[in-house]
Length: 322
Length: 86
Image (cartoon, rainbow over all chains, first blue to last red):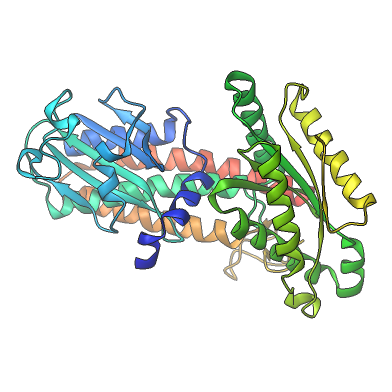
């Protein structure tokens, strides 16, 4: 688990996987921060997610804050260890004495933060409580905060399971389409680029017929694992049905095409033990968002048509709709 | 359906320690999550007692967090059923 503390790319990928960034307050998390405030008798409590350059406040009670720069956040320090972070008096701690949240409103003086530790070992952010007075926290209060932090992760984990395809761990179709809708809206609102890679496994029916459905399932898992490793935190993988997958990237067409070429190579070079060590190949359609794409359905259809072109071109390749 | 998921046999029962005769694949992730949550609730209860919270407030706190988890669990099992039937 110690190695996960230094795996910042893996941690950021985990933060994105839970899809809580840029989402507003929700009752589940508000209840927990409300309870923290009540039982610890503090004026402020929050659930935070530590992103690359910022901290997102998923729930903030007593604080009028949605996000903060990562380098000014106490939670940045909390996620660096697997232990609660206690700051009894900010003014006496050289790390925080000049922090803007200490020397300016809300004039925070003490803090307890417990990492939101996922079952696979990453710290997403923290459950934290703030006071305007210097104070210490007892062992029992620290245990209580740890239990509340575990509850936050339990809730987030269950939600993630609901969104996941249970075989491959990719997003399930409904969650992936929802992510596409959000990307499409961001493109409409602020021209934020996004590209869809739509692919399926070549000759998958023959794989099932020759090796059996269990081996076919293992091939699906192998492809999903390969793609997840290749795209890292830069994209979202979804299983759209059967042997069909989608990858959502925050890029324009050209980098998306480069990713498609890289995936073709990576998948074709990876032996699948369940298929007697033979690799599988995929055909990929690439469609970046542009003003011509008038809906999510149209976007998906463009990528699907491009994938069909890749099939027509002999498979194990990519084609672009652009 | 995936072979490594816990499809319960039609004859299974609560008495033999399984989840019964429901036609639903329960992924390991979900079983582990529910187990973890039970342990978390127990730790929460003990922690609340240890800091001297009165029984009525403990009950209120537990009810609040159990209700919350219940909603997510129902949503998850609905999603599970959708995947099973796809």
